[in-house]
Every structure is written in C-alpha cells, then in structure tokens.
Length: 546
Image 1 (cartoon, helix red, strand yellow):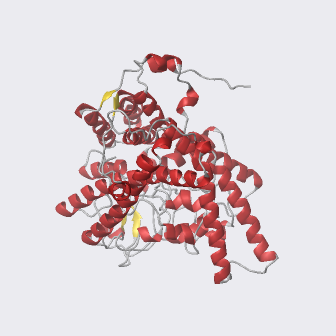
Image 2 (tube, rainbow, N blue to C red):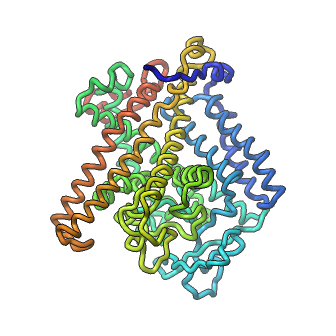
Image 3 (cartoon, rainbow, N blue to C red):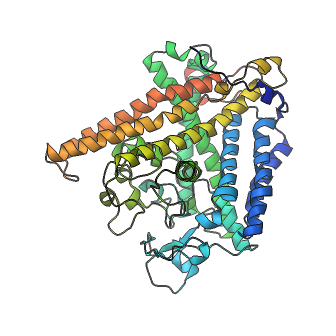
C-alpha cells in the first residue's frame, strides 16, 4: 500500500526561475537584516507593535523568501547553507515581531559597574524597565562573577530612537548564539576560559581562533578529497547507500558531517575576525566586538568524553545557532501555548544564561530542557546550591515526561523543517521551474529529505534518559555506590560506554541526513562547478584541483 503524495508542481511552476546570484541579491539580504535592526529602534507600544507585526514582518519574510527561491549560488552546499540561514532569520522575525517581542524577553548581561558604578550588592535584580520583572517574586539569583569579582546583571532595555538602542538591536540580531544575552546557549568551560574569557587579549584570542581554523581547514581538506576522489561515485549519487559496507558508511557519513562542521566554522571565524578587529580599532569591548563574544562554535571531543551522551551533544557540543528560536517557538509557542502542555524548562525570558555550575553536562541531562526531554536526576541535585533554577521542585511525573517528549519532538521537527528549506532551494536550483520535468515530478516528500534525521533524535534521548534513571538506581540499591563515590575505573567504563553509545546512535541515524544530501545533489561535481585546490588530494591521489 502506497502513501498519499501531495503534488507541489503547480505551486513551484508559479515561482520565478532562479537566476545566478548578483550584487542586488546580496543587498536585499543584508538590507532585510538591517531592517530588522532599525525596526527595534521603535518603541514597543501598541501602534508600533502593530507596525512591526503587520508591515515589517511581512516585508522581512518576503526579503528572506526571495533569497531562497529567486537566486542561486554556484556552490550547491553554500547555496543550501545560505537558504537555511534565511529560514533562521525568518523564524527570528516571527519571534521578535509577532510572538515573543525582544523588549519583553531578551536583555543583555553586563558588568554591574557599567550601569551602577557605585553599587556593592552581589544580587541580580531584573530591571523593571525591561518590561518583564516579576513584582510578586523579585529575583535574587546570584550572578556569575568575573575574574576581578565584577558582577554581571541584566541591563535595562535602552530608550527608543537612541544610539544605545541601535547597538542593543545590532547585537541582538547578529548574535546567533546569544553570547552576552540572557538566552546564551550553554557553553563548555573551555569556551569561557582563557583565551575566550572577558579578560583575554585580542592577540591571544586571535592566535587560538586562527589555529582552530587551520586545524579545521586541514580536516575538511582531507575529507573533501574523500568526497571528491575516493567516494566520488557515491557522492555523485551513482551508488545507493544500502550497498555500502560499514566502513564506507562511517567514512562517508563523517565526510558529510565534517563539511557542515567546517562550513559553520568558516563563516563564524570570518565574522568573528571582522567584529573583534573593528572593536579593537574603535575601542569597543562589548559582546559583539570583544574576544569573549566569539568562543569556538563547537565543544571539544574531550568535553563530550567527560560528559558523554546525546543530551550533551545537542545541548553543548553542537553549535547552538537555532537553540533560542526552536525553544520559544517550538517548546513554548507550539507545545505549551498552542497544545496546552504543562510549562516545564526555563522561562522565555530567563534572568541569567546557564552558568558552568548550573549547566555542566553531567547535570544538564538531569534537568528538564528542550535538549533533553526526560530528566534523569532530581532538580535539587542538578542545580547549584547557591543558585535558584526555574525548574519543578518535585519529582517529575510520567505525564510530564510524555509532554516533554512531545515538545522535544516539536523542536526537532522545526529543526528538520529549517534544514529542508535548504533542500527546497537545491531542488529549485538543480530542477528550475522552467524545466518541464519539474511540473510533473515534485511532491512534498521530495522536499523533506533531512527531517527524518531530526525527528528520530528524541527517541535516542528518551532511551538514554531511561537507561540513566535505571542505571543510577542500580548503582545505589544494588552496588551501594552513591553519586560522586565511583572509582576511577568505573568512571572510565561509564564514559566509554556513553561515548560509544553517542556515536553509534548518531552514526546509525546519520544515514537519513547523508542519503538526503546525496539525493539533493549537494556534492555533485559535474557541469560548470568550480574546482578548488586540495592539499590531501594532491599528496595522496595526485589531484591538486577537485
């Protein structure tokens, strides 16, 4: 029995034929981003809010949508990544201008002396001018301290139509990971220590960043030779995935992941060097212009070894570009506001970002969060003793576990949709609407090539959580080993088991992503595609341009 196919060729046939990218296309993309920035200069009041929602939001969505369907870049994977980024910006338009206004839900975290030069208190008081302080329950969360005992607090939202509000908006829009904001993605310790701390020099940061980039470039260069020489027939779409042996599956899956990994590092590093250099020239040291605002995009394998598991992988090791909008639109917006599921996890406007103490990987897996739907330890044991965390204080029920799993599924589904916007763009590029075959061959299922990889991830998270719950009980009741009392040998085997589990699961589910990208033609080298110099291709196979 087949499944119902939903044809899209009538819709696609009405789209303009994509043209090669030109200067006007780049201008439209950048102008739309800056329209978002300038719009945040306006007051967040009734009339202006309607202006944002009814006029600016449609304009921005049109601009970003045009980049997806109206122009094409020569490199397939770059084009895919650009269109995924346009979807990210579109989701942020919905977040800021429609559902979760930034003035009510976002604020910068700055040194107390920047706002109150003579203040001595070490408690965080969320400013009333932010528009989201809770008068019935004033916050007294201990703020994280800088190296010189400087205290971080929430900055009031600047007044409309001021240069300070312009910088506030500039930082909000360009800060994908929320570094320096209350929604900052969890960072491993190596991303907050020297040379990525608030006291690190630009020189030491630059050395570490460039070294990291060079290592990434060499790794990507090697796997590019794998994609374009050793595995050329597979990446051209001529060999089915099911015919590969286990070694080839692992090697080719790694080659696909490395390309995505380094592609993000490449764009991140270029942006970081531009902003940090500009900050050094102008003497600006806030988050978007300072070294501490641009830590490495990914956590290290060492950190994943110490705290293995899918929860660590998705919450701290991976880049966190989409964490904010996936959480507020998926977990809270659809899951809690639309479906009416019980509120769990953090607020849409937390007072402070997660600290290393309250969000280290070994503890995060026991909290209720969008990256790990099923808690595996009590909230009291997973939070810092001197920091109140916005989590339930009682043991979570089976009902809440199921609801969290549903919300986790929603967030991963949105993530799959986000990546498949790039899939749609590649289909339009390689099968322009003007060609006759697309009018009778494109269906909805042709677009969602990558979504299966994402929607299956919550299953791995729940399996991991169930195992952790039962294993911890087994250690306590049958082995008499409480938390923190494990031997070094036991810790080693626990880490080894968790590390193997993480990569086995990701390797098994990667087939959906790898097959999807191959079917989309993301790695094809035929036609007029450019050739690039390749070090390992030349050294190993004698092919210096591939």
